[in-house]
Image 1 (cartoon, helix red, strand yellow):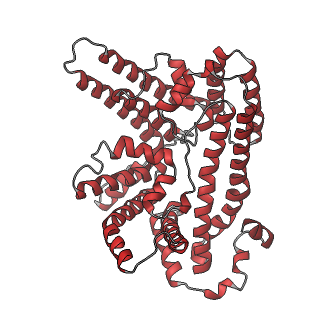
Image 2 (spheres, helix red, strand yellow):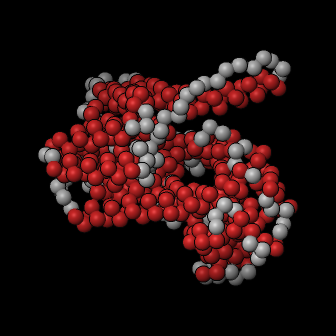
Image 3 (cartoon, helix red, strand yellow):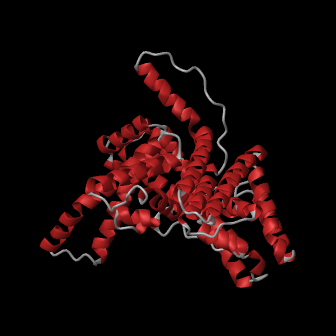
Length: 438
């Protein structure tokens, strides 16, 4: 069920009422039941996949704990790495099968066609399980934390299952760390039964999240869809407006789910990590990624970028690690080359930013630029926002070719008169709706 559905409007109050009236010792059991019911409302069978991922990573933690307790330390690290590898490849294998099968097949066929070989005449009729990317990464994070010794091993599979399936952040994040959420799951019996102030704050956050989603994102999506679906009929003004509007739409869409999730968890006495911190006020792309989808970007930083060597090696290797991380991040968002290119663009931005940092500082000193002035900061924010919006075009387009054509039309089909001839009111929203949005 969706957060902005009538079903959730009934489900969530019922969960809260029962949660606060039953004995504290069994409240976590009620949350586990509610979480699986929440997930099964989409497709009951796909709950088995989540349970399988839960079992694999739980047993991985148990195995690592058993190895740590052995008297003889020889080969201990090898065995632990083997367990992590099994957990990693089995979970990623499930993710690949259900999310990327047709994408892989499509690209294999493309290669076969180019080489004159016979294509594979079939496709996989697989419905993508909701939230599989989120709970898979959350569960894998626990395995890696267990290997590193950063988290106490959980020996109750049902408590661990609640950590993986906790319904507020199950399908859209934030991707929680075991060092935060697992501790809170174990602390449920000791929670304060009822805190009116905290509950009110949580409900306010949920209301704000619904405002972002239903009032802003869903309405501006009409304009965005109108232009992007037939971009070849529009000129610069409409195309640029839709690109900027999509930047706003996707922020309100993503952040709304996180805000509702954090608010719902707060009502239940849980504290989830912040996922968005006014990212469009960032003054550089590097800062943008410290403030955008924080749980995902820090996950890739801690579990991919740093293990690959991070910035502790030479410059070329650092940039290679950076680009790989952003390409994988793009692929995580969806099975399409547009997402991979989007990730690559942000990796390119980071590399160019790193290479020009020293030159920028020298120019600022040479021209006596007041870097703390409001106008300079605003200029940096505007440039960052525009760069991010250019990348968003690839994220939103159906394919890379369409995205390139979209950008080309912005540059070549200039129509300055559109600022005054009412073009803005022909993009799917009427005058009143446009004014409300503005």
